Length: 295
Image 1 (tube, rainbow, N blue to C red):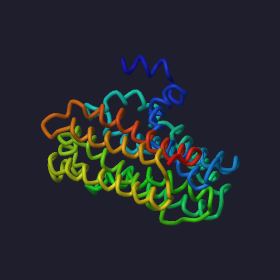
Image 2 (image 1 turned 180 degrees about the vertical axis):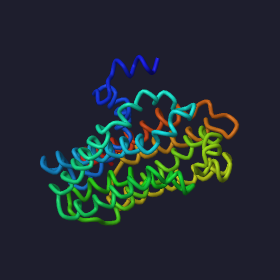
Image 3 (image 1 turned 60 degrees about the horizontal axis):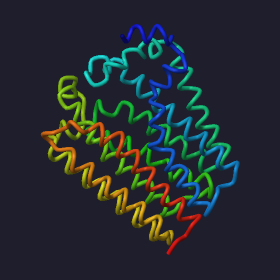
Image 4 (image 1 turned 120 degrees about the vertical axis):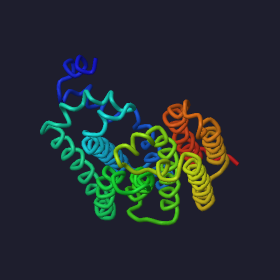
């Protein structure tokens, strides 16, 4: 079956590339980009800043996903959870993958340069963290937080794109998203404990066991809510933001209710469905609150 799909989608084909980078998962990060930009601008960001921040997000995400697939090209075919990625081997072992990574990294750096000097210089830290994360599970159990660091740059980067400066609010947004992503990545890593042990890879579930790892995941998500509470208070946001945050906190609580150490059947529901809604609800609440300050 994988061979037939690979034949129908030759290496470098658009359909294959979109599947490889899981383009539909853009929903995890893009809402926070828009939230950071709108909150920083106090409304619709200037068209130029909005365009280049979205281009930066597209470049960064697709560079990160392509690099991650490339880094794991020898591991994915052996992992029962990721064996369906075998169809990407032709692309990952061709020169095209280098061209794709260079193009998306170039788009990210160019977009940051077009925004302002601070965005440009910080873009190198983001690129470095992205590369570090892609190989981090080979030597540290804290790989989940490095993934969180990369996605946490989305709202903070959007703030910098609009204002050209940092401050406590974007730092709190960054910390909140970092802990959110790190927390749900710990949950997802529970599916790979046996494979990680066989291959000598590192994760918190493998190092600590599923129970303690899931407890740390819950603490991380409590930290997420705390960071967003602090950011909302500093910004003076009103009812719609707090309703959105309350809804997201409820989804995070449900996520930890349905995933237990001895029952991982609903990890996919937790990882893909609930977390997508967390980013949408929090971001929508903040954006609507800027335009419709109720209460």
